[in-house]
Image 1 (cartoon, helix red, strand yellow):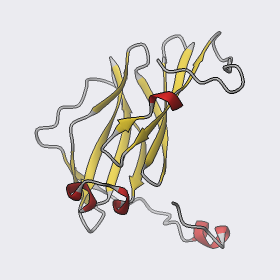
Image 2: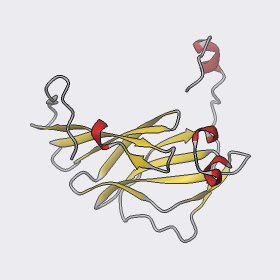
Image 3: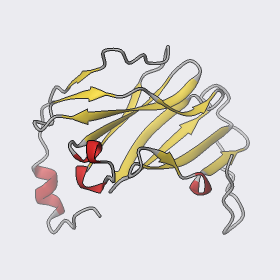
Image 4: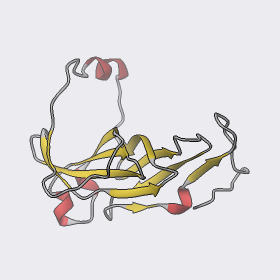
Amino acid sequence: MNPIMNNVAAAFNAVPVHATSISIDRAGVVLPQGGHFQGIQRLPRASYESRELRQSELLVITSSSDQQAYFVTCAMEEDGLSGRAYSPVTMAMSPLRHAGGCQAVDHYLVAGIEDNDTNRVSEVQFWDFKRFPTRIIPMTIPRSGPIHRSRRPAPGVLSAR
């Protein structure tokens, strides 16, 4: 569970105002062509069943490409400034090829993906990193409809693709 914050203003004021460079070794890891990195989140090390994963904090980076939305997981060193990338994990294929930002809560990652050509289809996906990583399909929230218009599923109904 995420820690409770007693003083939001003090925590906000403690955020560094200058960027910090992070070095990720991705030797041998091939990323899909095109697109760009979109979101980045740290997942705490204490929440994994795997002994190997518990040894380091994870950094997850969502990205888009010419053919798919994906994320890359990186095992970080103790310094938090360097790490090693794992192979990309496909979130969806075209037309859902544009991953958006992401949010981490404990060992869960939530990320949006969309069809950035017609803007008529998108979904929010939930991933469980405790078992490295498993998509929680029943929790996927799909959206389809006219451009720039949201169409919600009926109350209490979530569907999986």
